[in-house]
Length: 357
Image (cartoon, rainbow, N blue to C red):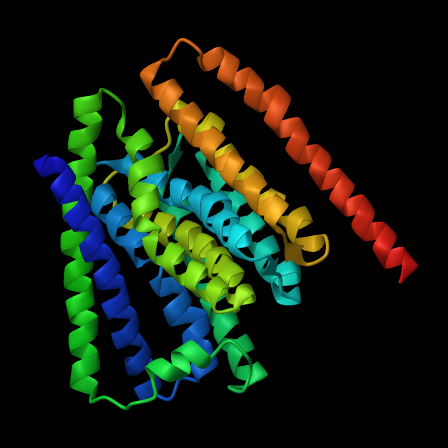
């Protein structure tokens, strides 16, 4: 019971800490003259991934190197399949041209880079440095793009509301420091409870990282995307997830690998199943987003079914359940062909619609 209470308390501290950090950092950036749009693209978008960063860095520094990768990989899978699936069920999501042409391809490229790096079963410090340099380049590109587009673009309402009332710089700094303290404490409790649960259940830390920890650290993305969908800001709901996934790979894995005393470990299951699933999920976004530039309710349902199947398979594999082989066959020969068939039909219908226009 105490372990579950610590897990829950850690998640609460992570969510509150991320929100506090975003508010302080956004106001601090504004006081230095950073445009509202740039703050939205960088500070706010990346701030929702602060829990993943805190947990993975803590896990890496404490020697739970596989938990560090599992958290980032599991969060990316959860973000697309569960959060976008749930949001699309609430209301079909509009996909902006920038996401289709720029951000989703970047998400696919960095996912493939992570897949390439773990082929030897680990992410070395050099490979982590490459990822982190990629983060700096991506952030610099967003900053340049945001400034060139000007501060009058859409999507700044939430940030503008946040910055409406000027605050003294010391208050902004206090929010940043307070947010960081909450993130560190929440990460410590969450990692400790996750390791204890893995030991009690007789499974490795990666399984806990891919499921409970990944879903828990993605709570800010859940709240942001669902609220944005309900408010009708459906492009922001998708952009939040895609931006978070890019950040998880470039910063969470990159920084975790840099601070870890040993290379980040990717076990046989992680390299053969979980990271390929992450890449497949990223690739699946391309045709789903491209066809009609809308993620409809049917596609949202497919995303949720895929996440349920993936989680079910993880649990069955960890517990070595008798029906594991049958479940695997059902996914490979049943669910996968249905999803691929839907993709082909959707692209064919979209192509016919474009030709007729």
